[in-house]
Each structure stands twice: as structure tokens, then as C-alpha cells.
Length: 316
Image 1 (cartoon, one colour):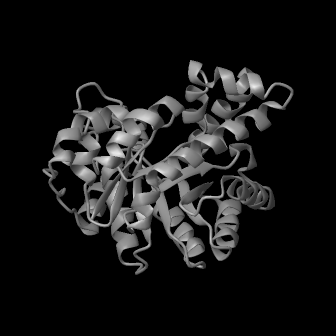
Image 2 (image 1 turned 90 degrees about the vertical axis):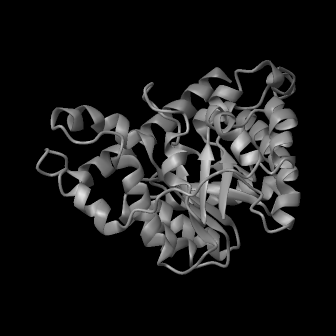
């Protein structure tokens, strides 16, 4: 089965379109991140809440609103969860805790206790501190979304950490950022553009499929296209694979809405790892060190989430 989650949140959306999509079986989960909340909090629908929260610190204001929104998302998704049809909503820990395992664990536990919903997933970045936090939280029965995954090694480490507990988990493999970063170099070398992102994702997918625990699934994230010449559902076309999750921005869900509604989605071609490695073998002669790219994309992702979080707090 392929699950579709929405990578978006604001309170008005939850009460309208999101509820409709869940009832229509178009989506069965939701993901959020600091950038999504930063954009949501600019909307008028939060003015009344923010007025009531005057006197609190910016982070306390953010948490109060984020907890309320995630609770609402979890409640809308609860029937799905009860049926065993996903029904998870994800919230991310403070991105500034990126290298602080204890701080990450403490924050995750606090958020979990405040939200008080069994179908919440706590998002933890996939680095050394994150793996420690994932393992500890999984052992405590908290569902985990391992985020900012770019490399096969990150995915395996996150899987091993989450697998220490009897929980549900997803490994969020970022896709489109590879193509945005590498396309200019590939074009200069006459190599195919817009392939590295989904090839890398399928390579990791193949590895995770062999790991055995079907409760820990690959989730394809960063699935909005950054190139105008590509169809909006380009990454969906290439990553609609069994036992996986696609978390999609609104415009991509709108693009595939009728196909999903009428159960007309087609499974993607499943590339074998040996074919992907054959393509990747051309990258080194083209001056592309994939390990370096993994590291750079992780650092860029962390920085982007930290900046979004800091800017949001300044606005509060």
C-alpha cells in the first residue's frame, strides 16, 4: 500500500480541506516542520490565540499553538489510526537542538505529554544526537519520524534506532533538493537531470525493504518540483511504491487528487539498486562526490529549519 500524507498545516486548512481529504481517503497522515509553522502563523486565523498568549515567551506562544494544531490534526486522523490506516501527524523538535541528544529527548517528551495523542509522531533529525534520541523515545513507546535523511547510512542508522522500540516510524528521505543542487553540474556534463533525487530515494527504499520491520517505512519528502518544466507530480510518478509514504505539498495533492479519489494511481517503475549504482558511477567522473553532497544537503536543511524557526520566534 502507498500512503499519501499532506506536508502542510494551518488551522483553517485543518477544519476544511484537510478534513475533506481525510474523509475521502485521499490522505491519511500529515507532516509539519518549522518552516510550515512559520508560514502558518502569519495567517489571520491565529490572531485571537496570539492575543490570549500575550506575556508568554515567543517559544511558549509557538508551542501552545503548535500543540493545539497537532492535536486537531491527530483527532481528525484518529479514525484512520483506529483502522490501522496510518492516521499519524508529525511535529518536529526545536531545530536548534540538532546536536543535543538530551535536549532533544526532553523536548520530545514534553511535546508528547502536552499533545496527549497516541497517533502523534515526533520528528527528529537523523544525526548522531538524533539517533540516540530516537532510540530512547522508541523504547518509551513514542512513534518517530526520522527527518532530513539524505544518505543510505542515515536511513539505516535511523531504522536501527527506531527498531529498538515497539513503535511505528518513518524514515523521511528528502528528494527534490538533490536535483536543484546538482542539475547545473549534470547539464554541463551532458548527464540526465532530475534523476539523482528519486534514484537515491529508491536506493534507500530498497535497503529499507530488506530490513524486515514493515512498521518502519520509507517516507518520500521534499516532493514539490523546483523546475518549471517538470509536471507537479513528477516525484509522485517516480516514487509511488508499495509500503511507502509520500508526503506532498498542497499543489501536488491537488494535481493528483482525482486519480487518488478514483483509485487510478499507477505504481512506479521499481528500479533495482544495481541500475541506480550504474547511473551513480557516472557522477564521480563528472566531479560530483555523492557523500559530500549528502553532508552539504543535511547542513543546508538544518540551517533552513533553524532560520525559519528563529524568524518565526522573532515574529512572535
